[in-house]
Length: 286
Image 1: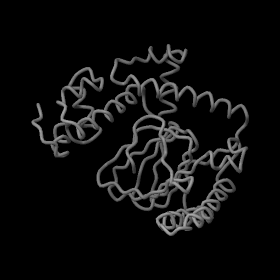
Image 2: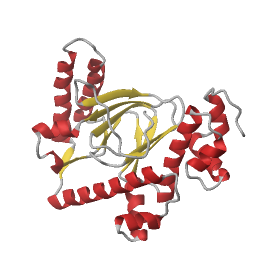
Image 3: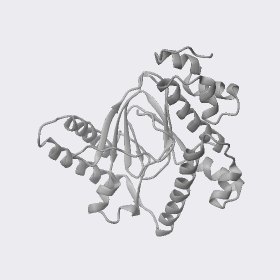
Image 4: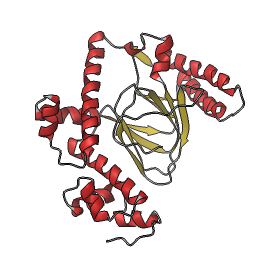
């Protein structure tokens, strides 16, 4: 699984295909921060287990399960099972919209088991698409398109339902609100940010906003902000020789004790041990 920052994810697709497909196998426990993107995403778990948090709801995936993340749904994954192996497919929503202008009327069922016939077909097609996408022959991408359309057909025919105009308008309103929040926090994570600041930004009552974040992100505002700060601090620790105390301050942590505690919870090691493992040639102040 790729390690994404907590923001809107920009998906880099295949040059000839409107998709991104890859295999995931982590050699250590991995947590992917809450993020969202317009493209739909399908995860097939081939072995092990993983927890997905999708629009605030938690799902436990086991071998054979399939999870579909809808367009612009906030989602994250927790993989602590080192036997975890998955296939992930991301499909451009704009590509689907080209031949299905009414596509925004539909929403997919989040999690399905591969026990029924349609799920088995979907699983086999995903495996086939992965294999074909790795073929670099001149016209192999045409076969990929053929498989992709079969996947899209199965998704809409068997695992989708329609939503009302009112629901679509609500979804758009929530998306715009979430986009505003994430952009503001990403731009100001190294400063003091309070729930009141976000309340003023969105013109919402602080208590309502707190519940809104918890419901849609699956975590509290404080946890969300902390995870963004940790993401940035980790990058600075492994890619620079800045003193760790300085990184703690730069990334918005009030005290080094808080930073060290949160960092160890997230990455299972202290910042200094991660720094040493990165093989940077400098003397750590810790």
